[in-house]
Length: 489
Image (cartoon, rainbow, N blue to C red; front, side, top):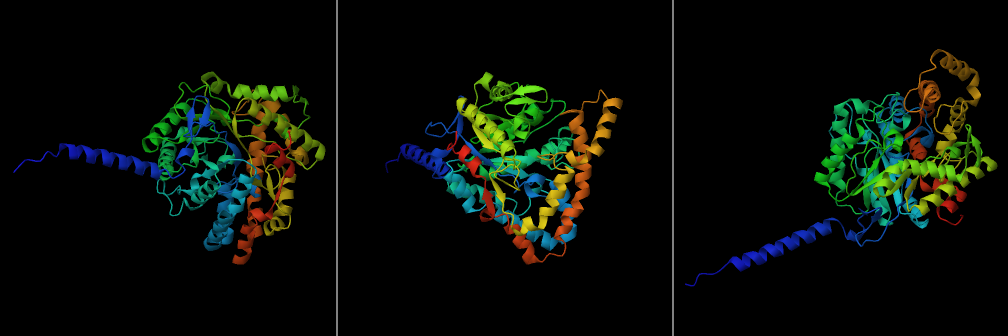
């Protein structure tokens, strides 16, 4: 019998199997494969090579909550602990499950798409995924609501960036990292760092084949007082994630609240470097005009942006402004100046071909394009408390101490006299006094007052409160919409 030569058959089978595997890998990445983003030179491009300018909103208040966005005082964990005592576990879980279910629904995605915008940055809190008493064990159902936002956005051709906004041990010194203290302990404890690395590995594994996830914003506003740990730790994260997900863009923010890139000694492939561009006159003072002893106009705020972006321009890499935007007062004259700040910022973003993400999509009326109607069950419950909180100046974002100057002035004068050389990181003596006295001590004292508003509410009432966060219960800030869409230049 003639001996058969199987070698050509083996070769053909190998080629077939390799092609099949390659096709399977393409299919795993979804039918929208051409929409995968990557870095090319100083631009973000899709798989066809078309430049994609990412423009959209930060979705604070949902998977990571903040006091001025959601209405409570102090930080999220402190509020949740007290509310659990007041409601009990069953009602507590019912309330927050319904808040998460209602906060971002299909009409929200449809609205953002209608504006011609293509990005939602999704801040997340590590508490959503793991317990401090059970670290590295991912909670059952932890990804349910994150999945939902990503899928809704993908349906409307909106990219998402997953933003780790609150880390175990706290990556910065303020409430928006869910920090009840003024210490960023994350940079001092390797175990906190190991936990975050593990969490990113889990996230990367879950979303590595999702083309409408633009990428991962690894640490929101890091603030290591020494500056020595930031770059080495980002390098650890990069190496770990790339072993699992070699494709998604990594978004990396500078130290000291996304301002300082001086410790970065290498430029990495498929990485976008991100700064935050909060312009001083967007928070008060004449514009243009003299504020804090300096003349400020559109040229000076542009120069400030260029200073924050020096690293990116030097290395010819993309820039993403991950947060910016003024706050609003309700005073037409004041707000007119702040809208002008915003228009000037958008003009130089366009000039330098910068991607951006304005802070914020929803809140209680201070900052965002959407705020709750006055007659929702939630606003009826908390409106008097919001006024009290504002009067005491306990929120860092948007509040003042004008009603408690009789308390603050003696403290400030004593510090100037007794501790003239005291200049704590990151923002000096005055802000440290405000942080410790108003935004930690006083804010924490208000937490029981807020949580007791929920006392004795029925399950039906709690569900109605949670449904207050639905799209149809919000008012749009039309002027802001017109500016963001380019209808008003």
